Image: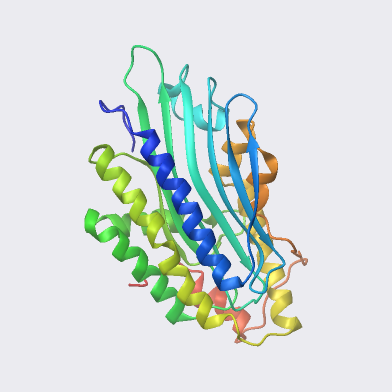
Length: 306
């Protein structure tokens, strides 16, 4: 849990890191796809802006977005202050990189990642700040080799910061990316953390960098193994059906989406996470014993992967 700290964060260093991280992730994904991201720079009324990069209709990526934003202002939205009365009356500054990749092939999982810094200040008081972020994987056809690799990479990224970090952030991810109205996980998890400033700025910033830097190491090997797997209409329809869960979570529960919309952020950039095509089917259930059913029985229930 965050707390008021005596050392102000180095926001310039964080911003430089985030801009470089966006470049590296876009370059890695573009090289795998063979297409380029297009960039859209924007400004936020009231303070700040960002650069949104989107790749659509690629050979690998049906729709993917990698967004950098840096926004600031005087009033915090209700989603930020509802349970944090100490933030009332403070100006805020928030910056981060957030991405969602929706591949075309149903055998390649969707992935999401973000890393961010939040700072709240007012005259005569110490700043309140924390880091947050993580990454999670949403397969449609689960493969144990892939999920093990994803979680091993996440665990290795967390290891230098304490033996308790990975299991704590892993459970946090399982709990967070859970559709309460469905009683169902969104995917197979990964890492999630928020309100983190343990050990001071240098330690917290290093942990955030470790998470951001390990994303491509976690994701690209899975992409490379699965991108040429044959599929047909059945697999495509199941992918579009499961994408509906992604939409439901982002619009109902996701803190970043709610904060962005309530703080006057750029709607197109905030909602870039939504898939290009999706379908809902009334009261549909997979046939027992099918590959589609295995997703529900063998992969979505929370488990210790490493």
